[in-house]
Length: 519
Image (cartoon, rainbow, N blue to C red; front, side):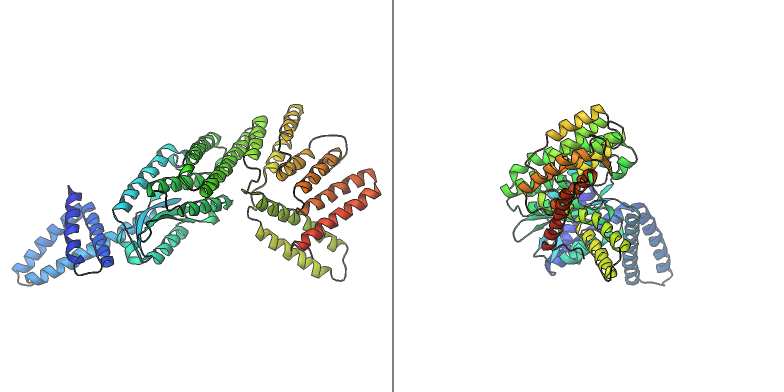
């Protein structure tokens, strides 16, 4: 009943002031009055005590003829405003003491990008947001166990209308940055075109690999443009994508701390949500549907990879290999979601690996302009590192190599060769994956840098097949030349050594023509 009385009083007040004031000011006053009433009613005991004391005190002063009724009324109004401000400050300080990883905001209605308020439709969406959040905190392991903490925005409704569209966005971004949060999200519905969009902020400095969140934000922006998608369906789809992405990007410490059971529960939750997202993909346009399916494939590969790492840490070698190869089939381009980006990343990382050897050569055999070349190499390394997006995340074949490094036996080798044989011979990075793993499988006696020399002819053939599929992959020439150089050294083959040098220089030449220079 109290809530009904509050709404009634505020509605009467809003009706009166709206006759004389602009709509924006009416909204600010209405929401401010509502917020003040809530604070006062929440602290009714303190207010009752204060009012009782004030009545007695002012009655005493009136009897002494020190104050008249008008003066007492003014003092009471000032007192109530002061109490209200004090309660607001206390509420703000209380909120600032509570830190959460994620803040999920309500839906606001935008008036021509001028100011924000909450109308009836936005209020209905806010109810839906609360239900979705409650569902995740109840059913999702990451949020249920408070591995990731979340909170609904507790921002007074008059504040968005007061600050306006641009300043409110800056306020939220600053709030997220200064409170050491992972992310924040809220929704805005435009009056002009009735389109509902999500506003997302990710604090990338808090993530070891923020790249998956870039994909998440890109997909959310794509769904934002689906103007024919109902607001409630859009909120459901976006929040599900948002919550599952964050739950996966924050599991590194869980693996490192050996919470394997909790991790498996988390991954099961994520897989369930991925299926839910896929089931809703038919609601959007064909372009958005394809992006959603690509997103789901990426995250399925991610979850399977995490399962593999967890199994490896538990010394479950065959299950770990099974999971990592399943991940390779789900997304051959991890840690990216497409071949072209992966190709450039692979090229940059390869050059970063070999440039220090070039640097050592200039130091060991100095020339007249060695210092200039050394400075150029160091600058090139710094520039290339800035171009690599997933610096801290390795490829899936590196995970395979970590698994088999100290665990090779006949059963593992047999299973490994079966998995390698099932890789797609028409996918360049499947071929690269097979090449990078094959060279470490025992064969013969000659070993150079943990590479079995008798495996190199097969590795060279695999790299040549990559060039047949994609002849615009210059670093492959350099890798072929490197393997040929190893074979030439072991077999004392001068002709092969010349061919090795030729292919290495060809690779460097093609890279330079592509804009990557070494000196």
